[in-house]
Image 1 (cartoon, rainbow over the protein chains, first blue to last red):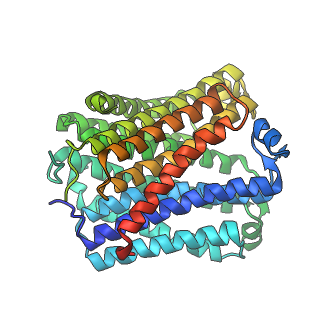
Image 2 (tube, rainbow over the protein chains, first blue to last red):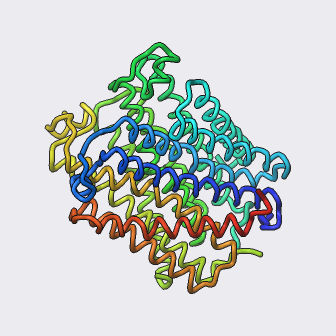
Length: 148
Length: 148
Length: 148
């Protein structure tokens, strides 16, 4: 069995994985912009170049936490989503999972780093993608359990 | 040459990669549980929702360091393990490496974040997977060195 | 369409991805060495084992920031580079991008963590790989846009 680039589930995985990659890159730039706006830098050479200070700023730290949360969840999706495709899921179901994952993570960034909103907004935007990752991981382990 | 899902080395890579993905997800939840138990949160809106404080807690930080250490090692395994498969390693040897990597990382989480144990317990659980990653990386670079 | 391991663009992706994996492993070891040199550790059991202190050290933090910056950019390259290959780019062009990305990230580590150099050295070494990631991500999304 070979994954085909004509398979709609594969195409869905590819496009949403790339969208999430671009979203993560955007959060990196949001950190730089927030550092510039708050004049709060991590390195003396940056503070000097932009006439700011080496300091810890609450707004910068919030964006950094959103970014770290991406690192904890999005690469896991790239891996688990790709492996999940090899278990021959129904295309419509896989596409739904990939779309919900991407929507959840984009929402997570917005309610965490762009427009902070009271809980449980962020918790919901976190748990839907989290559960999708966990579900795909369990499906993969069950499918290949004889290889353990 | 095409990687086949019937190849036992490929199946071993898939199942241990998914196991490590699930393990990382578990550490994320361990962080949340530890924050709840210690009432120590990173965001004002979380502290408010769970009647805790925005503070740095030693126990929470320990779990977070274990998590960050995962991010530094497990995605590298996902990549290097997959590329290593393309160098046609002996299946039994590749399977041994994948299994040892997964065992090492699971042990690392346990001795770091669940039941802290004096060194060199964590150092050993760190270095075995680290050396496996390094070995696979070197094998891949040697195999494809003409493409540099 | 199937990606072939004989395709020069695929071979270039594989070798530079593995080089970057090894580079990231090297930064992890640089952190350990810097902790040892500065006697500055993150865990009481490490401070005890190496007769140091649990403390935050400027030199250690600099290496850690370089490492975190790797985590924010290199796994995204692994994913976006692989997906970009599926859009059938010209091999010479794809190879140039992969090579420039790897060179930029290696330089970034050097000017950040090994020999700190005034800005804009690090900014340049950061933006070239960043823009390559963004370019590949946009190409992938455009190519598979009908799957959104």
